[in-house]
Length: 535
Image (cartoon, rainbow, N blue to C red; front, side, top):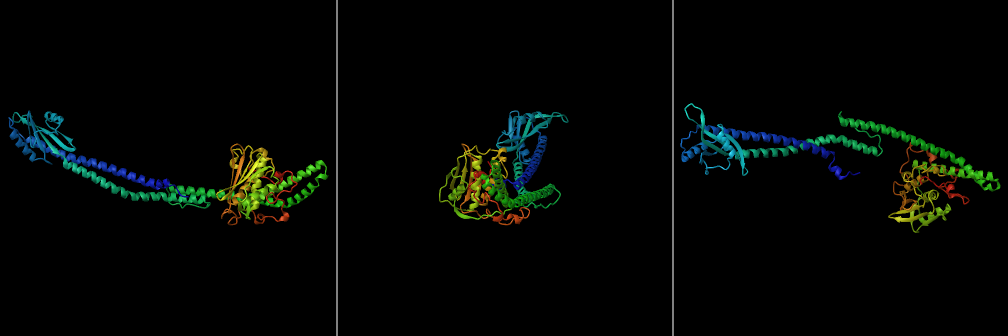
């Protein structure tokens, strides 16, 4: 049996590999993110500290001459910018309304008012990183201090120097870190795929073994076991499976033995009853013929004995027939017949032509076993007459390469709770039927005969009331494997061969499946053993 594509695509192997790769990806991304953050902070901090310390030293060395000369101030700014670390600066100076720089513009658009305010009020200066137009800058503000008296406390001179350093190199280094983290993660995931597949294989190997063992057991090989390796959870599962399989094999073997004993018992009893029943039937027939010469009470007793003996004989024949099916000894003797003629003969032999409507088109030639087909039709029609309501209709039709035989009655139909068990052996739908003359085997025998032909038998209720039984048989006869068994049954499943073989004509009583009833039968349903097993 093929598994659905969705099951294969998202099977346990796929989920294990994806889970393994997901863990590897999360680990790689987390590691890369932490590494990136620490490396970025280290790069920025190093550049920032170097620049701040260097610029503070330059600001401390700078002693402006007052009053300030803008041109002279600009040369000082050039000199400070020339000693920039770790990257070139652009130095700006602000003193009152005086603005000067080492660049081509006296005022920078990168400097913020917050930095200016902090630089003017803090003797240690301030710095901040600014991103403008997608570019990062380090901006530093340092007040220039002076001493009014030699050796006195340094006080702000009012001149504030600003350094603007582009952090292009740091951004390049950070981008390189990102690229390295990305390029390292992808090969890492590819490498992680190998242990993921190995891990999935190690987990799935016992699962596959379990699946194969379960499939083998489902096919009937109850002696299947799984090799146990290791001491992990999968080994415990294998041991549990083996223990369960052993208990199941033991239970099934006990059931087979019990079933075999039951079948042998039924076959033995049925076989042993046939000989005395043959004599009883012969005597009952003689008494029945002379019943008119007996007194009324004696005549009724004689007729009752004759009827009950006939019912017992038919029950024994049903049991023998079922035992043949159980022993797989039932065989077909096929011939090409006209289906409509066979149905008419069945109805005529049972004296049902006046009670049954027929739709039997001619021309349906089919290969089957006439005797077994007669049994099927007789059981279904008799069942409809006894437990349904007239009129009963028998209809033949063709559906594809199969002959369809439909038997419908106009009764109340089959109870919904009884419908699933309609073909079970000895099943009777109500207590009243349990005391009827039927053996409860008729529909089971009919189904076995249909199956032997490679066909199907269905029962259903129809709208408007009534039950419908539908038989489909292939026109070309049973295919290979659907007719006679390919091999002899095992000893535990079948009764002894001496009792499997059909009895000789001299010791067998009349059979409802083998011969039509005598014309004198006033109750053909009883004498024919119509099997009320299902309705």
